[in-house]
Image (cartoon, helix red, strand yellow):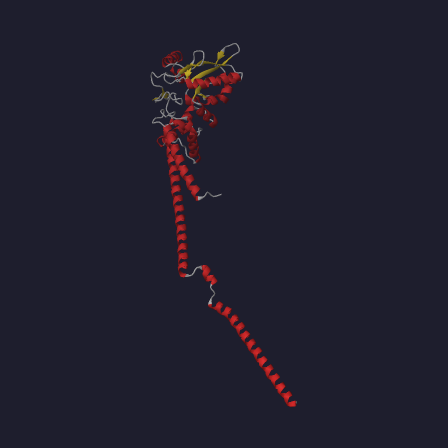
Amino acid sequence: MPIQPGKRIMCMLFAVILFASLSAAVYAGAGSDTNTEEKQYDEYEDFFEIIAAIRESGEHPHFIDANAERYDAYQARYPNEPFDRIIAFVNVNMDKGFYEEIHTIEDPDNINVLQNKHYALPSGWEPGDLVNIGGGQMMREEAAQHFNLMRDAMRDAGLRVNVIIVYRSYNTQQNTYGNAVSKYGKETADRNWARPGHSEHQLALSADILHKAMDGSMSNSGFHHTNEFTWLCENAHNYGFILRYPEAYKEFHGYVFEPWHWRYVGVEAASRMFDEGIALYEEYYGKYLIYEVFERVRAYIQEQQDEAERLAAEEAARIAEEEAAAEAERAAEAETTEEQEDVEELPVDSIEATPTIGEHVETAEPARSAENAHLIAGSIGTGVCVINLVVMAAKRKQRRRSS
């Protein structure tokens, strides 16, 4: 059923208001630097819908014109990787060598912060909301709440887990890395340990989870073959955790495969990575969380808003034109009626009740005919009577003569 003109324009005006509100929401979620966005999860539903709409149009919403040549160069290095992923990796400087071009994280308190061999924590930064999750291990409060729920769910499933490392301070990490360099050399140390400022354990958002054997012993050897690891791969996203250093992407993240290292990024981000099959957090961050993506979404919203306003204006003009034409037609009909009323002097009822000249003749003639007939009949009657009297008188006279 076609939408009535009035309803159509109301729908379009509503669309304008909707796009304006989305624009304000997205603007509120964007910062001024790659690592300083203040994103709110309750704004993500509309944000991701817009991202999907842009993708359906055949565009890459996270494509940055200034990086075009870098995309091509990185794609040449990894021709088997989809271009969508290449864009995301370049957006977070993964085309640079490890520790070659280091950026200081400006918002380390952000749960979604990206920290790796390209992004480092500020010297001296420490998390301010640490809580004990057991065994003296400290984790940031939001992450700790979700980790405790996840650990309880694993235990309810009959799994045996233990956490050996969560938070490390800058100084502790510096000593750990320094000892590894002294013992194994820098190249080996860089593959197995993070340099100070680059370890996610300093964020207090990551936990090293190990299988606890029946005899109480723990080991990370072969953890990826355990039921605990399988459960985490299938369920950790429901609690906001991701496998941070998957085996298939060692060349990109720069570490050995660590099946025990799980990072908290929030339920929304972890679930979207799981649903979209995104294995590496750098890809997710480069697709959705960099400032330029928010800029692209704002531009798309503005385009849609402008189009909605244009359609609304056209619809309003069409309706106004139709109403003007209808009003002109009504005025013409009223003017014709007035002219007809001016010509006719008598009311319609009187005109219908007054006979015409012809009608007067037709009604008068029968009356006169009846009167003439009456007069003729009377005259004939009188004549008959006179004749009778004359006849009678003649007969009497004849009888007298006879007698």
